[in-house]
Length: 199
Image (cartoon, rainbow, N blue to C red; front, side, top):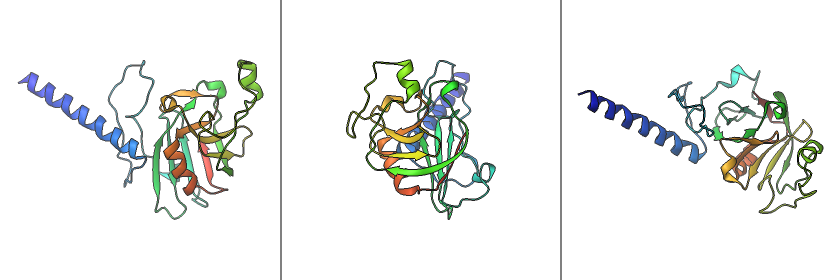
């Protein structure tokens, strides 16, 4: 009897994780309320965070939705987007800064939408790793992927990535990274002036 209960519990956990993975790979979820959370205890060694996203209310972070709003959660490693008219809501898995010293939190905004980003390492990146190339043109080798939203903070962006292993991990030098297909979608939804909060 106990064995059957345990097996049933494990199947429910597996099905819940599979459903969440399916939702995240689709890149969005439309929900009413704050019900999408995963509270299954995970060992500390887990480096990806696919199954513990939570859905926030925009009112907890922004005064209004003028120009839309983006919330980047560095703990759950997720980005949420709300359109100005509240008709569109998106939830995407992200990469986040690899250390606390590289993490900037607070309010900023989208100041430029770059349809074909090129990349230059920041001075602090070059200090940490002098072997980095000085410049990478747009294309398949570019660490910013195929689209980027430049923020009002110098050097900070929400961008795509060619290296899909980074998503769900602490792996960036300060930026928020998305799968390329997700940044393409967010790029179309966000506008210059979209509010951004990083927590």
